[in-house]
Structures are given as C-alpha cells and as structure tokens.
Length: 90
Length: 460
Image (cartoon, rainbow over all chains, first blue to last red; front, side, top):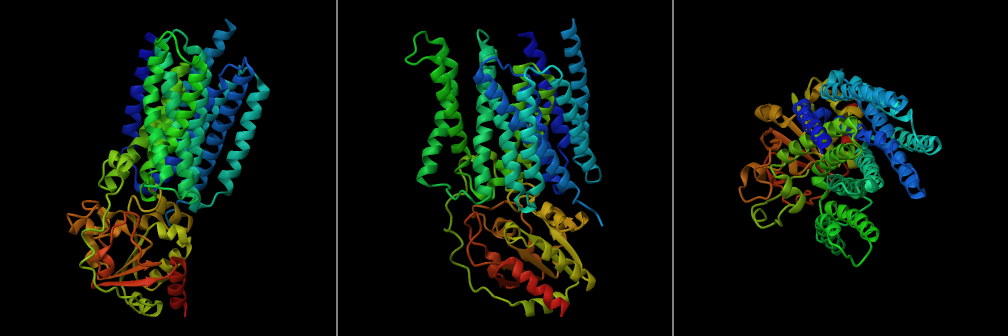
C-alpha cells in the first residue's frame, strides 16, 4: 500500500506542475500544444514494452498495445513538428 | 544483482526523460520556443523507450509492433492535410487510449488479492476504452463521415450504453465479493470490456460539431490520465509524470474552450444547446446582398480591415486565397488584422493552424479581447464562414441560448461583409441578427470562390 501513496504523491505533484506550466498559453499554440501533449501520452508505449507475454493472448495484447502506442508517438511528434514549422512571424 | 542494475539505470533515465518532458511542454507554450520544445520532448520519449527496451521479453513482437506503428504513424503524419488536423489528432489520441486499455487488460492477472490494484485496472480500462471509442466517434464526426447526432434513435441507444457502462464500473467492484456468480468471472470481465467501448461511443455521439473543440480537449486530457493510471498499475514513474502533464494540459484547454462558449463542461457534454427559435424570429427584416465588384470598391477605400474566419473557411479550404486577399489589401495601404475566436472551427486553435499553413504571420492574429475595444475604428470586417462567434445575440438578447458567450463584436465595425453559402443558421441553431443589421452586406456563395472573386478584382 505504501508504494501507492508514493506514486499518488508523484501523480498529484505532476498534475499540479502541468496546470502551472500551461495555464498561460497563447491561443495560436492551442493546436500544437494539444498535438504535442498527445504525442507525450504515447508514453503508454513504455508501459506496453514491459507487459508479460506468457500466453498467446498476452502476446497479442502486448503487440497491439505496442503498435497503437507507437502510432501515437511517431505520428504525434511528426505532425506537431510539421505544424510548428509553419508558424512564422514575418 | 545484474537485474537490479538495469532497473536502477532505467529509473535514472526515467528521471531525465521526465525533466525533458517538463521542459518540452513548457517550451511548447511560447511561440519562439515551441518547435524546440517538441523536439526536446521527443528526445525524452526516445530515451524512455530505449532504456525500457533493454530487457524486453520478446524482441520480435516488440520490434515488429514498434516498426509497424512507426510506419503507420509517420505515413499519416506526413500525408495529412492541415484542414484534417482535428480528426487526425482525435485518431492518434484514441490510439493512445487503446494502448492503455490493453495494458490494463493485460495486468488484470496482477490484480489477484490486491483490491487497490484491481480498482486501478478496472478504472484504467474504463478511461482508456472510453478515450478510444469516443475518439473514434470524434474522428468520424470531424471528418464528416459520421452524420448521426443528437436526437437520433441510434444515438439514444448508445447514450443508454454510456450510463450502463458507468453502472458496470460499480458492478465490477462489487461482483468479486459475491460468492456464487451466474457466469464465471472471465465472461463478466469480457462483457465489461465491450460495455466500456459502447459507453465511449454513447459519450461522444450526442455532442454536436460546434462543441468538438471541448470534446477533443477533454479526450486529450483523458488519454493522459489513462497513461498516468497505467503508470500506477505498472509502478512506473515516467508514465505517471508524462501522463499527468498531458492530463493537466488537456484539462486547461477544456476549461479555456468552455469559457469561450460561456458554458459549463457539464452543459456541453450532457445537455447541448437548448431548442431555440422562440425569441428572434420576429424582428429580422431584409438582408442586403452585395456582389464582388461593389465589395471591392468598399475594400479599396478601407483603411483598416478585420478578417474573421470560421469553420466555413476550413470547409472551403479558403485559407490560401484569404492570405492572398490580405496581402493585396496591405499593398493597397490597408491595415489588415485577423480576428480569431478561440472556438472558431472544430478544435482549439484550428484557425491559427490553417492561417499558419497559408503563411500568415502569427502577429497579425488577434483575440476577441484585443480587437473588440477598437472595433469602431475598423472600416470593414470580413466574416468568412463564421456564425455563432460573431452573433450579436450573445451581447444583446438575454433570452438567446448563446447569451453571455464572448464574441467578436463585428457588428460595431463600420461595414460588415458576411461570406456565406446560404441563410441557414449556425451550429447552435440560433438565428443571427448580424445578417439583418443596417451595416451588413451578404456575399453569398462558396467562401473560396467569393474571396477569389475579390482577389481578381484587386488584380484587374
């Protein structure tokens, strides 16, 4: 149970940090911020990599989790970068 | 001992990755550093993935999955048109949610005899699953493939599934305590998985296109929270930190969007716009159409012009001709600004992305608070396919469903051009008195063709 308290501590602090960091974003950047944050949520890939694969079902689940998280990570970062390279001040 | 060393190395690397995510997302919030911020966060992700992959179970499955996902994701990201960004973000978001859904499913076995772990698994399955199926529906709606909305029989069926899915969370928490079940627990668990997916459909299906900026931000937030919960299940700090950051940023966007509509999040998700048409139908009057030639004569003599784009500009893909018109006006000595409402379009910042694609400098884009005070110095406001965000009912008619919503007060400009296909009302279904104002001229037709008409008048 103690481990959950520790993890919960990390969770609360990180949410608070996130709220502080992003509270004043200009509306020009709303879409790239969302898309960039979306790419970060692909961190699920790290979790997917650690899944046990003892049974056939587990292997299939792990494979699907890895594949979909990878689409999220690679697609998310690439499209955000593409978008941001268009934002220019002349 | 050797195993311990790898875990230690991984945890140290995760700290670095977390620092890079935090720095990256902070830099994403400023125009000058945004692109660098995205790259820094990508480096963090790269580090986290590499150190995790050191002691993987089954290299074939892992590498196969990563390569396949990287291939599909890259193709989509490179090929997607900027006008399709909203639905693409929804899709990627859904895939992230689906990954956490699978993680939680796979960890079901670890929850034996640990009630708290079991609770986390059940909740993560729910959040991840709803994020996935809800995002798919958002994708369908944004790409206009899915036309079923509020009031439809199918929608009502799925709405009941949404409520059933909420109850099923409780059921899943209570059922294991009951000794003899009519079905074995595995079957019940699979039924739960299906209900979660159906519930996500019912969650998003009734929500209309104009409310999509809120929904898409909320789903974004949920995908982060799901990842953070998966981190709790797997006892993995980097998932918790990164997921929480995403959850927080999505939450902030959701709140900004809801504020820009002057509605509560609950109202947007579960009520929708009230049926309208009661108040304004009486005092409408005549609309005054104008053709491109006359519009050009007025624009030629204008010293300041405000361009107000809306979803109609995205639909007509008119952003490039709009930029061309803006440049011609500037060459003519006119001061040109773009008035961008936070909820114009289908996602937060939708108009900004389109105009950036068309090469419009971002310092020309102004928010309602900046342009409204000097609206009376604007000679011509050109409204391109925007409706509710310029509807004066929001400030003038206390009975209107959109009353109180902050708008771009274009009605106070000397002349208003409204580019519009026809006289249909906006998403909110509210009649727009702007069209009947003394100083409003309607330029009917496809936005792109109308603007092209103006552009060619300028060139002649």
